[in-house]
Amino acid sequence: MTVENRDVPQPVTVLGLGEMGAAVAGVFLASGHPTTVWNRTPEKAEALVAGGALRAATVRDAVTAGEVVFVSVKSAAAASRLLEEAGGALAGRTVVNLTDCTSGEAKETGRLAAESGADYLHGQIMTIAPALGAPESVVFFGGAESVYDRHRPLLDLLGGKGALVAADPGAPVLYGMAVHGTMWGILNGFLHAAALLKDEGIELKRFLDHAGPSLTALTSFLPSIADEVDRSQYAAQYGALRHHLPSIDDLLRESRARNVADHLPAHTLFLVTQAIADGHADDNYSRMIDYFAER
Ligand SMILES: NC(=O)c1ccc[n+]([C@@H]2O[C@H](COP(=O)([O-])OP(=O)(O)OC[C@H]3O[C@@H](n4cnc5c(N)ncnc54)[C@H](OP(=O)(O)O)[C@@H]3O)[C@@H](O)[C@H]2O)c1
Image 1: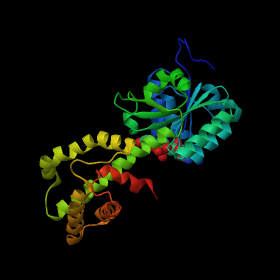
Image 2: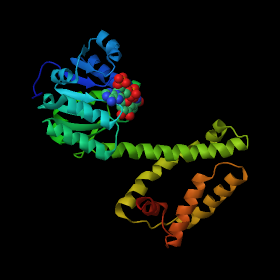
Image 3: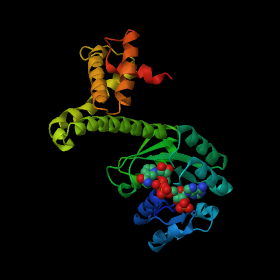
Image 4: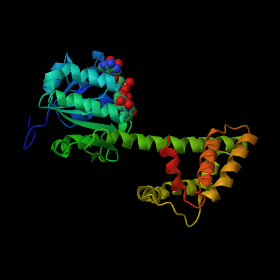
C-alpha cells in the first residue's frame, strides 16, 4: 500500500472514540482526510459522523477503509484484541497505536501487527485531547524510520512537536513514563512543601512571588545531571551529597514537628544516608542514580 505522490488525502481509520480517539479522528477530519471510525459503543461516533466521518459497523470494515489505522483504547489488552479481530485485513496497512501501556506491551502489540502483515508505529501522546494537533504538542513515536517518514505528513497533524525517538516501539512509552515520573516527583515535592507552608498560614501565591525563580531554575540542572549520569562521572565541586544531608534532615524534622506527612523527606534521607555510608559523600546528587537503578 503506497502513499507517495498522492494528490488526494490519505484515508485513515480510527479505532476507539473515547476522549482521545475522538480528538484524533477530529484532527484528521479537519485536515480533509477521509476518516472511518469505529467504537465499541457505536453512539459515540455520532458527532464525528455528523462532521463527515464514515462509520464502520465492524473492526474489519473499519480497517479495510483506511491505509493507516490509529488505535486509541483504554488498555493494551483491548488494543491487541482489536488487532486480532482485524486479522488479515491489516495486511499492507500501517497501525499507529496511540494506546498507553508498558514498553513490553507496545512491543507485543507491534509483534501482533507484524504477524498480520502490517507496519507498526507506537505513539505516546503527551497532551490532553483539546491540545491535540497544536504546534507545541508533543507525540513520541517508535518504529521503523522508513514507516515514520512515509506517514510523516499525517503524523505531524497530531502535534507540531512530534518526533521519532527510536526504532523500538517500546521507547516512546519509556519517554512518556520518564516525563510523567519526573512530573509526579516535582508535584509531590511541591505539594509536600505546600503542606508545610499552609500549616504556617503562608499563601502559596505569596511564596511563589519570591521563590518562583528558584523553582524555575531547577529544570536548568537537568542537562548537567543527565551528562553526569550518561558518563557515570559524579564528582562535585560544590553542593556535594554531604551538604544535602543536613537540609534533608531539617525538612524531615520540620515535617514531623508540624504533623505533615514525612514519607518524601524520610525516603530521601534514607537514600542519601545510604549513599554517604557507601563512600559517596563528596559526589554530586547525580550519584543517586545508583540507588534508583538498583531494586
Ligand atoms: N484523554 C487524554 O487526555 C489522554 C492523553 C494522553 C493519552 N491518552 C491515552 O489515550 C488512550 C484512550 O484514552 P481516552 O482518554 O480516550 O479514554 P476514554 O475516554 O476512557 O475512552 C476509552 C476508549 O476505549 C474503548 N475501550 C475500552 N475498553 C475496550 C475494549 N475492551 N474493546 C474496545 N474498546 C474499548 C472505549 O470504548 P467505549 O466507548 O465502548 O467504552 C473508548 O472508546 C488511553 O491509552 C489513554 O491513556 C489519553
